[in-house]
Length: 164
Image 1 (tube, helix red, strand yellow):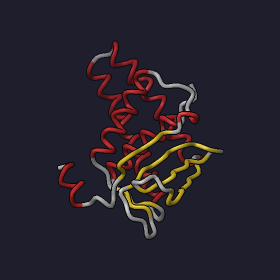
Image 2 (cartoon, rainbow, N blue to C red):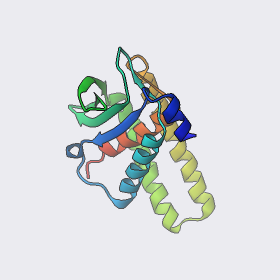
Image 3 (cartoon, rainbow, N blue to C red):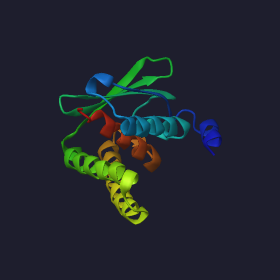
Image 4 (tube, rainbow, N blue to C red):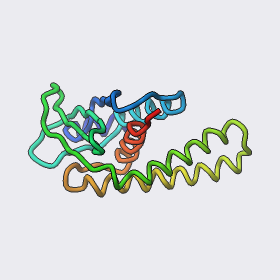
């Protein structure tokens, strides 16, 4: 299916993504795994269309600067097209709660019962869904994205908020 989508919507997709590593203190193995999976899945299948007269496919650079999410959008030749910024304030509590639940989840998968792991995972997924929907709402007039793309981008936004 990912192959079909790439052929039918080549202009509405991200083909490269770069995370500003200066925004991040360091990643542990669990975070690195989540980041790698989100990037892989995002590049395999996404729907991404900035408002305006822009032709994709797109390269996306994500960073955090002055409490704002910065999404620098480039064409496939790496020419800058537009930068979209969002305040991170609406995401802060949600990201903090998500980190707390993720820490519990990673701890639980090492020692807890399957029932407890599943319960924590349900909470983790609910917070992730909430963050994805918030991202879609905040980007609605700036960038059209589907839910799967929003979920993967939310994961990467969380990674950018890690401060060690």
